[in-house]
Structure formats: C-alpha cells, structure tokens
Length: 247
Figure 1: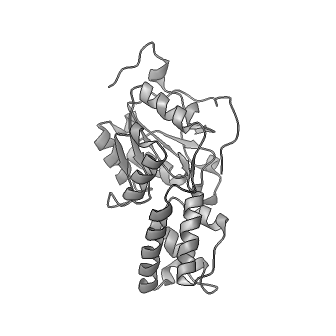
Figure 2: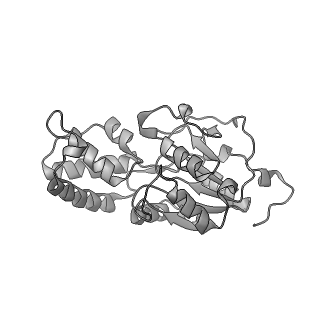
C-alpha cells in the first residue's frame, strides 16, 4: 500500500484555497498493520476464525462498527451477513477491538512518503488545516501525536465527533465551519470514494492519492479534481505567489 516511487508532478491546476481538510487512514498514514493486529487479536479472543489482510484492507474507511460487523460475518459460518450478527456478540467484539486497537495504535503503521513535506508546504502557504477521519476521535488524535503530525492541524476530528460519518457531508461541513473557511475555498485530500462523495456534497474541491485503500476499488474511477502519487505534489496557487500570508 506504499506510494509508488515517482518524482514528477502530475499535470494539475493549482488550487486557490484558504484551508485544507486531510483524511488520515490511507492518506497520511498506512494503518493497515494496526487494523490487522487489532482485528486478529479480537477474533482470537472471541474464538473466531481469522480473516485475510486483503479483506481488512477493503473495510478500512467506513468506521469501526462497519469493520467489526464485516469481519465477524466473514469469520462466521458460511453465508453469515453483517446484519445477522447478534447484538451481544457485536458488543463483546467492539469492547475487545477498541481495547486492542488502543494498545497498539500507531505501532504497526507508517507515514506515507511526501506527507510531511506536503503538510509543511500547506502550512508555509498559510492554509488552515484540519484532519478528518472516520476512525474514533480519540484514536485519530493519538495517532497524529504518535506520528508527529498533530502540530500541523488546528483541528482533528474522528468519526464519533459528529452525528454522521463520511460520505455524509456533515463532517466536512463542520470541519469547514471550525476552520472558518467556505467549502469552495477548502480543499479536501483523501484516498477514497467516501472522501470524494463527502467533499462533493459539501461543495469542496477534492484531490485523491493513488496509493490508499478505497475499499478495494480503483481510485481513478472516483469523481475528483486531481489524483497524486504523493501529497507534496499538490499545487497551491497562493504558494506560487511572491509572498504567502495567513488569511
């Protein structure tokens, strides 16, 4: 899941924006290892069969509840659906998963190449920044701290900080509000259709990275305003001006 080693910048118009919202899993940090370990330990604790790494990768980005229900169904008897999972089993699984994930959050993950340089460029251009993830807020903020990324963001939001998760536009709208920026002046950077759909519905321009998860589907097929191999390839109009000042 690491980005390809390319140095050329793709042809893309520079974005004239005041702020940027950046996704976390699959965009800034390759967290598949963390998810794999937490899921494996949860299933072992419950006496369930393990699931494959590819299956876990396809489930990243839609929130913990979706992940847990899906792996329980996959590890159950043939034909089991996520909707069939008994409430009691789901509650036990949630408690186990949350504990295991908290214990290893960040230990089996790595920051993608180009992320630090990209965030530094955003900051140098005077953009206000928010991280917006579908993972729980506490895990989101802890991971940013552990990977040395927290300093770049004025705000960091998780999937449980709002009434709805991406692809609903509400989290993006609320992040724009927190940043004090109009949606059309706020670039969203993500790796999946969830990010693109939320951005489009909120009225934000959106750039997607090619190396993320996107639920196992080709990201090039997603409606977006640009595709990049690394975040530091994103061009900002204000960074091309003689001077860049804070808005």
